[in-house]
Length: 170
Length: 293
Image (cartoon, rainbow over the protein chains, first blue to last red):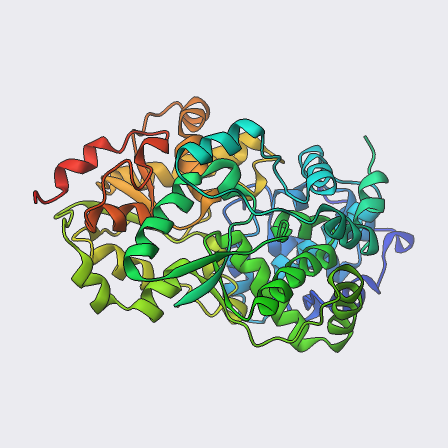
């Protein structure tokens, strides 16, 4: 997202983007936005990511710019924007949708790819070492409940998560 | 009072003091915790960033496993709480998603999502099911005059239309629970702000600088400690506090307790029993507030 004014080419505009996003189960209605800026005023990363601008870009249909910009990944998912929006636009979920679209195109930040790999291998985001297990025992805590790794992996497979992860550019 | 007890990933991996202090407090209060076997990660907002369906399917399976035990689900992690509530909400409002969930659960566990189980965060169990009156009776060593910066964390409060935890702009559940321990919940300007943790794996310095602003706000307001109910937030403020100082160039020396640690101390448990020694920033300075027995 550049601050400079860039003339838009009609070939870069996708008028369906806003409907596509509103049509997912996450929802998010960019076309209700009145650009009041309430979302951005409460955003903890507003210096870099301005939710009202993201929503405007969705309205304009700037699919490629949005999917390739790194700012969408800076959303802290605090949901303050969605909580306060007087128009029920739900900017946070719109940003989730954009990240999901970017991921399908192979754009996933390295930190998330690593977490995804842990999930596929162990069913957990963080691997729990034998040392950790022993520390728990020393504290008198019971054994950590088992994870059905295969069943978890099946969910990751059936929802194409593993495929998306493998398609991510290294 | 029996609950299916779901720990998630972060607590057994990084914040065992949350588990430890919850178990001692729960036992004293007559809350029986039955570990939920077989459940994996809830997915959380991190998986949602890659594929929302994966996240909510993972959470739906946990709901179905709890339902299969015939128990309400008690969670400690706010990230898990938010994901489970989102999954329940989507299953209820989308027939399409419900069918997908059931098809998948049939193939993994031969289960059907029936709904009906309740998802409760630990503090909801303490506030609603045990109640402040009962808790007050259990306070043996109140921490008179301790100034606490209460940090709810985002994923119990927002989006309130789905979570229905408390008033998202002016919550009071945790403040009330903190104050029954004799402590005072102080006003601090950045109380309801995010801790920055969810972007730790994406932009570490930005994530830590957000946490730094919060620590500064708590310190300037005269807090003796921060009290939170989310393992991510605890790790962010406590475990990573030295790293935050590296980024911001400021020293905070701010102890960060998980709520059952504070409650446990006030109920008369020893610092070791509530796992205070597992916190990175020493909380020893707080013990002088404890009323002598």
